[in-house]
Image (cartoon, rainbow, N blue to C red; front, top):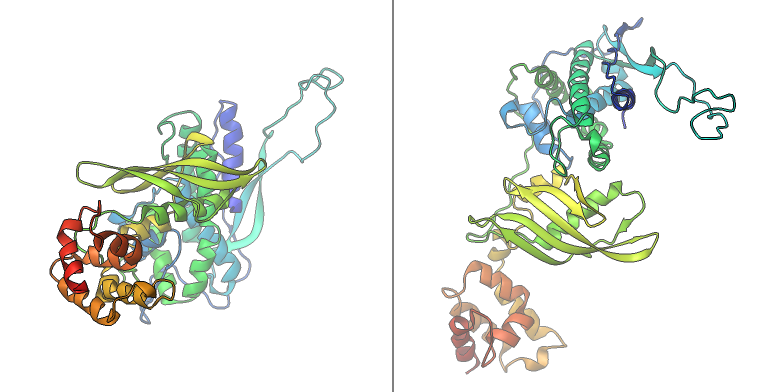
Length: 447
């Protein structure tokens, strides 16, 4: 967690709890005495071809949108804690890892520090007063003072961070005082939901450091990203930049709407469990998913079971994933059924790009039905069932089903040849809905 973000949340929570909120004093920039050896201006770079990537990061899509100037499509809340963590984290990581690229007029990052030294509380007979009857102050500070962190920043970026921090303070206070945000739902400033705050902290851990490292401190792409990051933070019009690496959607078969929800839920829970305190998720333990759809066929809710280990040993829990606008919105676990835990933005992005589709177009191009048939006939365990000409039989089936099976069925029966085709479609009777349509070809190829 960033120093700046922690210093924002801690005093704010204490003051709100006392119902006497006061805005924390903004840190005053202090000019540095020395200049950088290789200064970088806040102006966009145009001397070289720019290249920018955020591949694999939790907020990849929004980071790319910031770089390209597609501000209207950004999903991050400019006044929320998540964006505050991103921009302050970027500022601090750049100040630590790219010192030589700071401009000559760099300023020191300062923080607000509690005036009261951390001391052990005195002995209290009743938990409220000391032995002399004086009330014990158990929380809060008598005041704050400004201290330098030894980390420097571009003054334009620092000003933007301070503006965003002020907006986040207002949102945090509203959350603490119960203004806005429904119970159990996703909220922009999740101080009243410690689980959501944990989810954001865990998701962003190391993100901005990785972004800087992969693009390079002095790269034209990172300079352009920073210039638009400041513009977005201040609500200004963006610059349009090219050269961003964009993840392309996975091609899927027509007519397939449902995803591999077992795999989707497994990835969502595994990622969220990084922030669990006591329990440990058992990867691959998602079972019995039940999907609810809206009239258009889009998922609205998924319920499933999962396995975890904790102080009481191995246990089974229940999970509900709610969807909003067609994508996962909240994770509800049975140990806290009213607490909305935030799904990974990285996984949501992958889901939107069809990465969790059951059958992809690439799978269909590999003629999976013929491959499944040949594998079944050559498997030592099942080869005894093969006809006299197994390859000819598989070729007959493949040709016979060319205009009968849908591409999705070719994938399905190819991947589940023994269980669904050999012991189902190819049998004299089967409860498979496609049996009456597909069985005649299977019978003719055996003759």
